[in-house]
Length: 205
Length: 219
Image 1 (cartoon, helix red, strand yellow):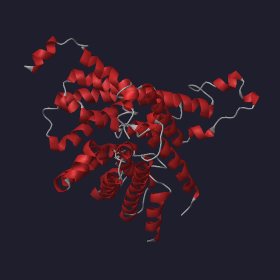
Image 2 (cartoon, one colour):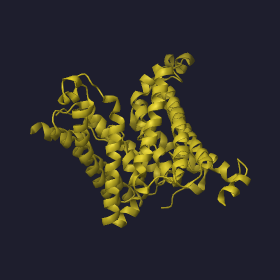
Image 3 (cartoon, chains in turn yellow, brown):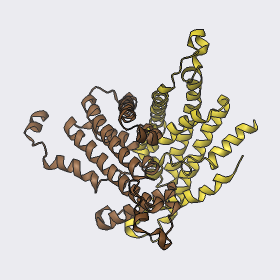
Image 4 (cartoon, rainbow over the protein chains, first blue to last red):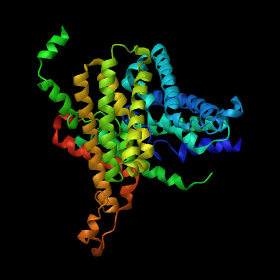
């Protein structure tokens, strides 16, 4: 149990998707104009990560990794399908995103229009595929650990995008040099936030 | 019919030239459209991987744009994301195998990042925004233009990060040959860290928008 909580906290602060690995930057920069839309997108990302990581964990554990197919019988002990993991992971992610898109379009049309092209782009949000690949690389011991990692990464991403959105809402009242207004200053603030988050790197849990 | 009108149109008409040239500056995928940032940060610590990455993206984006544009009328809108991703993923596997076969050293350096082309939103973004609604030839030009626009930013960022961070250009120790180290110059290790890539892109945006006043965002 303690291990699960540790993984959760670690994936929010120390291994933050945005600030430690710079994954999922595109939607992070483009949708962070207001806190409201960024909360919406953040929750969508938590949802997609929280489902795709455990699903991909099961696929990886029972179908793809070396010797995973041994439950089929003796002849399958040697089979290693891990070269298929990219395609399998991305297929699971894409179908999940399509599902989320339909649900959002049906129940909150306003959010659907404000997210625009960035909703289907969750499918190619590097944070999502990155979550599954990190899960594969770190070899979590149980599906609960994988789930807590997925949810934690999602929460970390939400934290990052809400943080930058709040700063951007405030910075509108500051006198930023005209060419730097909007996107430029966002890049620089994200760089500074990244430097700040690097101070978590030393913490061991 | 539309196709007849298009045949009379010259291959490089004004409209088509704009498709190719606009993404280089006024409609740049990284600095204006905000697509493909993750890999721009990940591969730009050195010039060589950045160059190979730019080339791979040119290949994948151009071909996938054409393929999706050819298929656009046969793809049911509800499952378009999956179709697009399958096309992209197969092309990325091809590029990956090609790099492994012919430039194994660089492929080893890049290994993770080649896979990341699948999740490079610039490709998905152009497929979704352009190829789904246009003919193959404009889609080809659009893909090419956007990939080159992406590539030149990558190479500029990598140039400065490698020069200031490790004092080399394409692995060649420029600053050492110039004798700057004897004068007490030290490499700025900070430039190697990912946050500096963000700040350099920020500076590029600053310069670009200072030169093109109409790109400046409203308050």
